[in-house]
Amino acid sequence: MNKLKAANLYRSELIPISGRLVERYNKCLLKLGFIATKLTHFHIDGIGWSPEVAEEKDDENYLCNGESNPHGIIISPLQNKKPVYLPYHTFDREMMQQVFKIHGGKINDITRDSAICIDFDQSIDAFYEPLDVLKYQVVTIRFHLIDNLDDVREEQLQLVGKFKRDHNFIDEDLHRQLLESAKKYGDLRARDLNLETINFQTNSFYTKSFGGVYVLRDFISPIIVFEDKKWYKEAIKDTIHDIFIFHISQPELMEKLRDHIIIAYDLEDIVKTKRYERIKKFEFSQYLINTQHPIKDILNDNLLFKSYLNKVGIETRKKVMSIERYLEKLETSNQYKISDIVDKDLFEAMHEPHSSLHPKHQDLIWKLLVNIAPKDVLFLYWYDKQEFYKQYDTWNDSLQDWVIETISNNI
Image 1 (cartoon, rainbow, N blue to C red):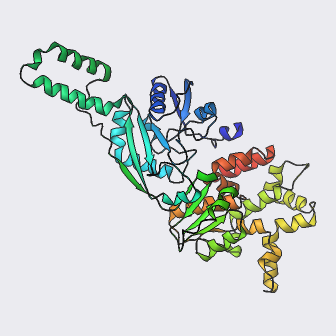
Image 2: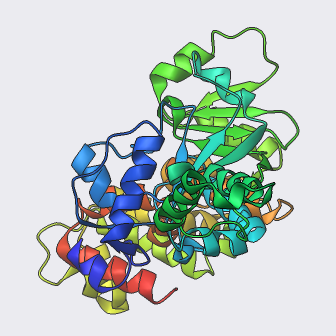
């Protein structure tokens, strides 16, 4: 990942944590029911997740108490507008944006000397079967301060109120309580430490629960898409819910998404785009083995591209150029079918969210599409960084260079 880091394409916006902030972070972990970290230096993202702590615990989802109980930690106002690098749900960053929008001022004050534990309560104690994900409706975002600072403030107010009554100002024990509290926590009386609960309404989303599930419920009919075959087979046993259930690899899924006006394609338009060129070049790179030139040069130089295209087998050539071949044949006759000429995976990669969709729904559908057909390296990086990183590790060094250059030129 060193080349990605050098290009600022690998978790470049993490916040460094050390000193007292580590102590506060550990208090949050303990308050949430987790084990404290032994690390003295690490980094966190917008929701408080740390890659170093995750590695230490050997658990990417260490901020979750089971699949239905995710949490967050705020120890710095710098987390505002920062990325959520490993979201458990596609709406996690949106929830954090709402948290800072509503409570930003109070968060700035509280994190001067405290930290905030976040409970994303979905009103689901635990999941028992895959279609339990349909229970996601409203996420209640609750806040808890370490050292119960909000309760301490109330105690200070009560002590001061007692101090002012009758002749209590001469009570030495009361003096001692006031001084001890002030020394330990400071004067909290004038501070607003009350973070009111926030209700976040969910719509369509993706969750990592049950091996990864897309819940599309803002369209003609609800559609549930499973990434894990085991949970898909379990879900299709359901006879109660009036929904469509698919595994992500089923060809029928794309047809259903087109029928419901969720995705669309226009081959004549897309061949004129940079996105098509990226997809075609990446597809071709998968067949370039033991080349005399670096793969990056072959993909960037039209002369080299044509030269190597003519060196690969005829079937590979037909596959890589299948979209263009189909359009050429269509000019002479309309008897040709897409399935007769165009490679299935490439055809799926030509789809995009329907233009009528709301922008946040488009983002979700892009994530689904790049997981169905991960051919566009730029969109894979944008919409599913974890999958991008996994695939990146398997690529030739020169292909990695081309990918980094391609992404950097489009940011």
